[in-house]
Image (cartoon, rainbow, N blue to C red; front, side, top):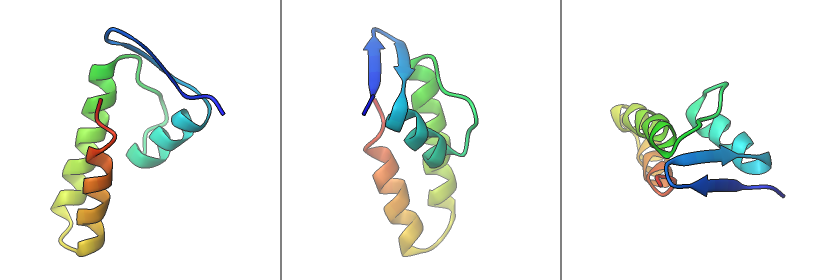
Length: 68
């Protein structure tokens, strides 16, 4: 299992982390920086917070745990 390589603001997602990021955010490309990563996660959080149901609030909470 591969993961996440981080050096300062630079970021590289590999293996399961890359797949999970794409699934969580609905994006096809991977972020190259921590800023890009957090922006994509925050956009997904905003989407799920706009949906009014318990499941969407849970998904938003789970995504918040992925912020770097």
